[in-house]
Length: 419
Image 1 (cartoon, rainbow, N blue to C red):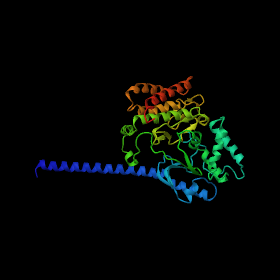
Image 2: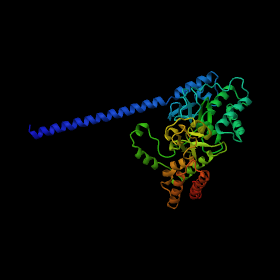
Image 3: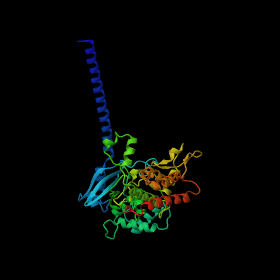
Image 4: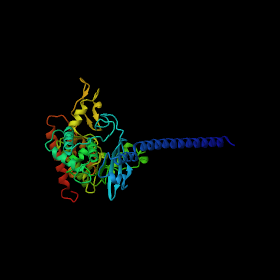
């Protein structure tokens, strides 16, 4: 065998070994990623455990509600695909007879209060021990009023809201509220999302409550979510770089007139929760995944966990110890500053809801915008993003920019069928 032939054989063998090595490395890394993601999925998705826990309490007569019989006896309320992001708050698609919905269930093992995680009541387990046996309807109404007052402040029409809560509590519509029905309703009242759905029930921004059992509840399904982009299986998601994912999301959006209508919906939501009928709420996670829309392109809130009453936020964050401003962050978007003299967080957020909403909408609404409105739209959006939470004339600027943006978008689509 010649030296040249021997050299070529050795080189082929080296390349073959190199190819095998990198192939095995790719398989190993891929298998590890699949294992980690699958383990994460099985740890997060515990809907079966949630159902067992709820139905056990229902059968013992601790709780009751309009969804209990279907979930626990008739098996006509099914848990479908898991969308859970946090183990203590289970989220599933579901079907209830002919209805399509979203099922949300609170797991019992709720962590201790932590500003970085939840701004829900500080509790260990949902015991369903309130109200106590012997509580009259009037006393229960008083409990509800006091709870609402603590959550949203002493608003003029809280009595009407309390009446609506009592109406929901009478799940079987027999004109009486049983103790199990009252305990289910009280547990639901502790949740930000349920409270917001009550406050905004006359508006179109929150999905309708279809039924409940304990603190498991079924909401109307929102056909299109997230706000923009596409949902991919996790096995594909993990391999897509962030930059490419962002570009893909912007491609999978409705036509511009439809985007304009959806954007108006988000601006109207900001308007509704800013000094609304039942006080002010802070939007602490204004991401595309928090919102969706229906077939008429009306905006719907998908996840209201981080839309919190401003009064509760300020009360809790004052107690938060800090060394830097970043210690005063709740959710993804509610940041206050750190008072270094006291090492406590200040109560005022640095950016208002509108500024965060405009930042979320900027790329979404500018992409494909008609040339005759694009320049003015971009100008208004950047003015909106620059809004600060503590300026002297913030409320006037807030209202002015909000109205300018809504007017600009409505004018462009009002003459079309998309409006």
